[in-house]
Image 1 (tube, rainbow, N blue to C red):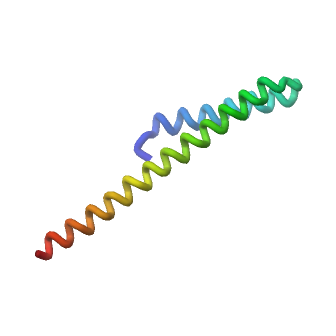
Image 2: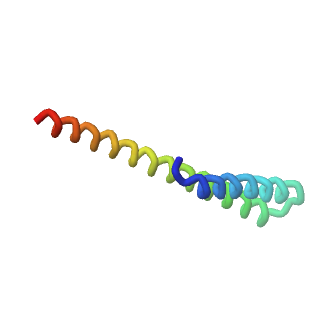
Image 3: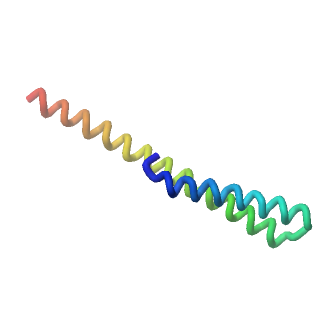
Length: 74
């Protein structure tokens, strides 16, 4: 969770997107509803990508730590 600013922007986009979608449904504005869905989905995708990046970094650190322990035993 190193990128707090990016994550907060994603959360904002998610909320704004859901609001646009709800507004579009309430006013029968299909364009605004689709815009909101797209914005919300984009925020979800960015969140998943950030989480994946964090997982990869953590996995790399674990592997690096294991190799450094093997080097210490030599």
